[in-house]
Image 1 (spheres, one colour):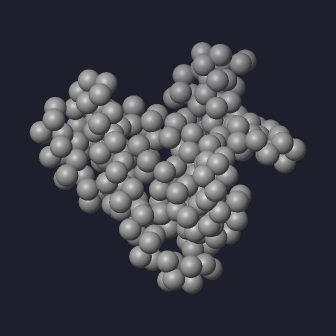
Image 2 (cartoon, rainbow, N blue to C red):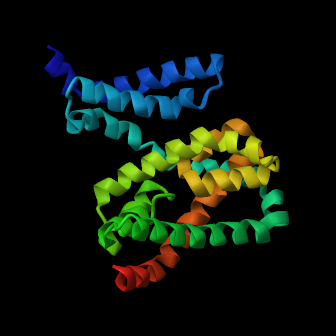
Amino acid sequence: MFESFVNDPFFGIFLTLFFYLIGLKLHQRWKLAIFTPLIFAIICVIIFLLVFNIPQTAYDNGGQFVSIWVTPATVCLAIKLEKNYQYLKENYIPILTGIISGVLLHTVLILALCLLLSFNGDLFATLYPKSITTAIAVGVSESLGGLESLTVAVVVFTGILGAAIGPGLFKMMKINDPVAQGIALGAGAHAMGTTKAIEMGEIQGAMSSLSIVVTGLTVVLVSPVAEILLNVFF
């Protein structure tokens, strides 16, 4: 009976919503990063599948019906951006400068990490797009010869980590500007960082949704440089 339930498309939908709602309740009571509904649901679903040895394909029977809402949800982020267009207009130079310089620094740091740990070129190509949305990251990783499945895992981990530690880092570094906070979360932790940014405030959410797009485009445009580095150092 359990096996037939697991193979039912309803299983993936139920499991996702069940853990999301638990995370929502926990986060309403304790404002801890680990209880952020999206992060909590992802971690719990992975643990549940591993503990009960359920293949990921079985979860995908229903999980894919959840993932189809990613695109419309992403489009909805533009509404917050439209409401806060004035902030973009007043700060577009520091915003674009920060994102582009961040992508370039990120590329250098990934290269240095790979050389320091004696990683091969495949791992450099896998790690390079770790801070952008999964759909773009998979394409960039594939074009550079990376391991696509590992790229997805690294992208998810980066998003969870960024959303979890981002607000704490802002307090520690005394970064109180909502525009800077939103840009940092979107550029460093893509959609998961944006969910945290939306919780922090409307301006943070709008700036984070903007930085997802700009960061993704910048990483794609810098890809030829990454390919040159790949050929030179590996």
